[in-house]
Length: 345
Image (cartoon, rainbow, N blue to C red):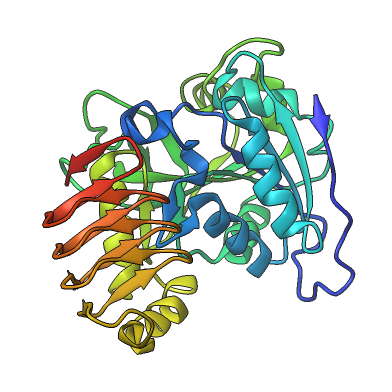
């Protein structure tokens, strides 16, 4: 069922007219375990900020203010976090799935909410720099039933292959062998869709929009196009990718939201607040951290809120989730640590 929305912000300007969005956040994040056993995947922090907030900020910058988010595990904490932070900025509704419906089934469930053409569908774990308005214009110009945001193919990158022709029209989904005269691309997980897509999604059961929806649309001759992008993009689906996203942020490789916080991290004199501790920037530190004397923190360290670091620790290239504990004398390099787990990256 849909729950919410929050009050609309009257001051939003430059919005993409009448475009709504859905964020897919119901996944279990199995490839990010053990950390997703403690924290829902969409709230896993990148540089101390839940990754779903990067997606919401992208939508806000693009002028989208009506959003529905599907949830399954940890629905309460997600709603609490986003409700308190975004209540004056966006209309956010929630679709809680007692059983996971997949990307297609989850979308079909909120058909009544997404009642305008076109609308955006995006993953909660997709961090990217994207001209959403350009993708929407491309969608309209082509008279497309669906437009997939795609990027240049990378052999061995571990993503499903999508193929399009010289006019940018998607011709094949997830083929086993390359198609003659077609260009392979990577699908980023961002869609611009028309109401037509709902004709190809079954109601009340699990389905995948890629394998079921798009394949059926292509078989029926629907116009599905690709919109090429080349800026920053990262699918935060694995422990290694999660670690790399934090490193991208702290080194300023992630645009928009990243640059401001990295600058703050470089300029803040943490030593003044914690005498006896050496900080080597870039370091980002959350509120309430306690660090023992004789520690050397950095370079490239993210400390979440409430972390405890014992005396004499040496830490670099590390991501500490909220309330992580480091004992006296710990030597940490290339590591993600939470309250209950520690994984080498």
